[in-house]
Length: 514
Image (tube, rainbow, N blue to C red; front, side, top):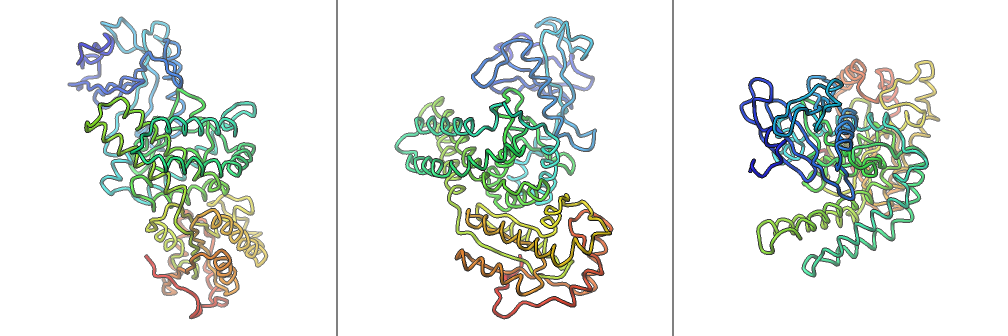
C-alpha cells in the first residue's frame, strides 16, 4: 500500500510530476529497486540496501550504480535510436515529500536521490513471453547471436591481475553453489541427482579449468551481461536486445563470453526450445569464431541451472509448507535439477553431413535439421565459415579476388575439410551431435566422415537437398547481390562443380529433409 512506502516513492506516484498525458503511475519492486511506470517511461530507483553481492547503502553508491546501469546496457542498444531503452541517469531534487525530476549535469549537486530513466517497452515482447506464445523464430536467434558476438568483440578484456574468470574464482563459486543447494534439499527432493551432478562437476573440472585458463589468456573473459536469461531479452522491432545487465557486481558481469551465451542456451532448453538453442550456438560460433566454447559451455550451463535451482530452494524456505507458493518453488527447483542432469548427460552423439551443389539449400537443410533436433547438445559447422576462419577472415568478409584461385583451390579445400573433421571428432567425443554443412561433392570427402562415425560408433547420415539448375543459378546470383552470406560461390564455381560432382552411392545413408 502507498502508505507503507518510503515518502519519496509515495510522492513520485503523483502523475502531475510526469509529462502531460500520464494519468497513472504504476509501481513495481524487486529486492534492490523501485520501478515507476509512467506513460512511455520507466524510472528505476535503487533501494538503500546492502547485501553480500550488492551495496546501494549510500547516495553516492546509488548514483554510481545508476550511471553504471546506463553504461553497461547501452552497449546492447538497438540500431534504431528510437527503440533504445536506456536514456540517462536522472537526479531527483527537492525533498522526499515534494520531489521533482532534475536535469543531468545541472542539478547533480542538489540530488537527494538518483534514478535510471528508461523507455518503457511492451512486456509481451520479452523472449520468455514469445516462447510461451510459440512466436520465437530462428531469425531472432540469428540476429541475437550476431549482436552478442559484435558486442563481446568490442567489450574490454579482464585485466590480467583481476580475479574475474580466474579458474580459482570459478571453482569457488561453483563449489559454494553446490554446497548451498545440498544443504537446502530434503530427502524428497531427489538428492541423488545433485550428488551425481556434484561428482560430474568434480570429474570434469580438470579439463574445463585448463580450457578456461587458456580462454582467459586468449581474452575470452570480458565485461558482459551476467544475467542473460530469456526474461532479460526483448524483441524491439525486428531486433532482439538484451537489457537489465548486472551493474552492481563486477564479478557477476566480467565472465567468460561463453558464460553469457550459456545462460540463454540453458534457458531455451528449459522452455523446450532445444532447436533454437542449437541455432543460437551455431550462429554465435560462426559470428565470433569462438571454436573452443563448446568445451566449457555444458559445464557453465549446468552451473547456471543449479544456481537457478538454488534460488528456487531459497525462496521455498521463505514460504509456508503445503502452500501453492511452496509447491511452485519445489517444482521449479526440480525442473532445474532435471535440466542440469539432461545437459550433463546428453543423448548419444550423431554425425551428419550435407551434400550438394552451390545454391541447393544445404545450409537451410542443416539449420532445419538442427531446429527439429530435440537433443540437448547439437551444433553446425559450416565450411564457408571454416575456410575463412582458417585464413583470418570474418564470415561475411570478402576474400581477395586476386587470391581467389588459391583461397578456393585444392590445397585450401583439403585444409578446410581436414579442419572440419578434426573439430567434428573432438565435438563428437565430448557428446555433441554435429552437422557439417559443406558441399561434399567427392566420395572420398564423404568417406572420411563415414569412417569417423564408424570409429566413434555414432549414427551417421547425409542431408542432400536438390534443385533445378535454373534455380541454383538464380539463388547464387541473388546471394551475391545481397552479400549477407559467407558463401562466395559464383556461377563459374557452379559450372566447375557440375563437372566433378560424384553423386551419392546406394550405400550412402541419405536422410529425409525436414
